[in-house]
Length: 469
Image 1 (cartoon, rainbow, N blue to C red):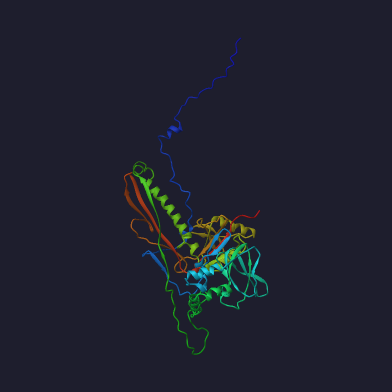
Image 2 (spheres, rainbow, N blue to C red):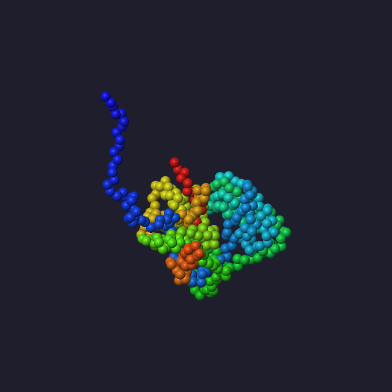
């Protein structure tokens, strides 16, 4: 008897119809248009009112302002040593316009570095003020006395700020507040004695200070603008004061900026692969999307006209505790009238939500251009991923007022340009080269103008890390 121990051979199923892989060779697939992950909501471009700038330059005329030296001071850091840039001392009110670099360098060399830790008292209210302190890094609270004798923080100072400027010229100056550090940091201090030593050896500085002391001959309002004389509440035949509105003789001008790229498409692609989608149109669509993303980035970060870099220093505030609390948002709103929009990085918006939730609060939602967006005090909070986030996980929150009639922020562009494809964006044919590449020059013109300083406010050094368990 024999036994067949070999396994049974597998049955091969015979194909009885056309396979899908082969069928696709004869069928036209249903396909999407080219997708692009870089595209964002670009809320800033949508909320700005765009003003026609026919001459390529927009001039912002303002009332004459006597506020001087309100810029922030910059420093040079070499290892652990920090020095103030001599020309940056011109940001001080009493040194504004003084350009003797040798004298400014002498003053910078006499600044003494002082490192401090959190909770350290730097100056005490009521004591003699003999130094000006320049904050290189850190956060300092100015603490005053309230109506009922309680202590309260009246102002928070940060990088580039200073306090005690009156001490350099007034020998009888007293500190009106206590300065206490909220974080670790560094200040550079210049004493009145060192300042007077440089002053004694510089006739040019003495002449400049004499001119500075005689400068404010015209009264100012609380914004630093030349005051308009008027009388009110009088009775009888009172001689009324004459008045006129003086203007700034050197107004700020904004020139249109440009973003450009050259789009290249091979003629073979344009000839043979234009169905069912036009290749040039799709390439152009994605290129324009990238240009618009770059445009929004520049409107936020450009050093010449970007909102972050051009916000007035009086409109920049620091957080009270680090994260973006409701109190910080309220203070940001209180600095200006008619605030219309918050702009924040999406991660910052998440941090705002955490702070509200921790207090049992829930943000409002408002309808904006057909979409529901979160809001605080009725002001929409819009995402803008162009606002930088530092490696320390801090960011900024912008609040803006928009429109020419409202003396806010406006976008600048010029329509009617040659080969215009979209408003203030042109697509210009550049020809076909010897490699059979079709070239198009794609150009976008744009800028932004802040009509008055309080049109933009910035909450700085906002901690967005989730430190809660």
